[in-house]
Image (tube, rainbow, N blue to C red; front, side, top):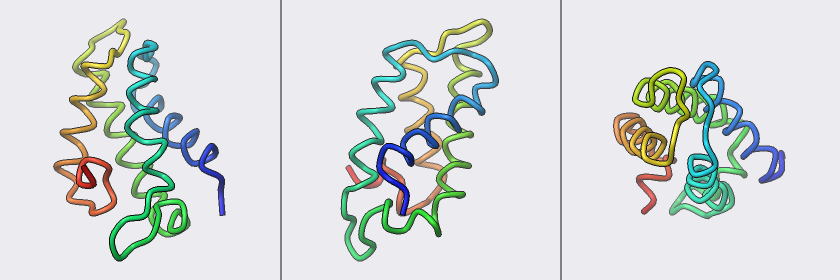
Length: 108
């Protein structure tokens, strides 16, 4: 099972892939950490933790992370950077539309 740090690194990498070169500023990085890091090891009713199920759900979560990057980059425009405002709006929109019971937005 991958560590919490490894999973979070994969998630941030996927967001940056989706952003396609538009940089994230420190506030966006901080938002992602606050939004997703603890979620990785937080038990969810009837499912356990995302970390426990990563081998099954990881690719879908990473697809969502890439979509978050695309959305945030579009909102920020080139040359960016992506700020907390854009990354938060992207997280809420993508997670809300995904209908995935694992998404952090549905756990709040």
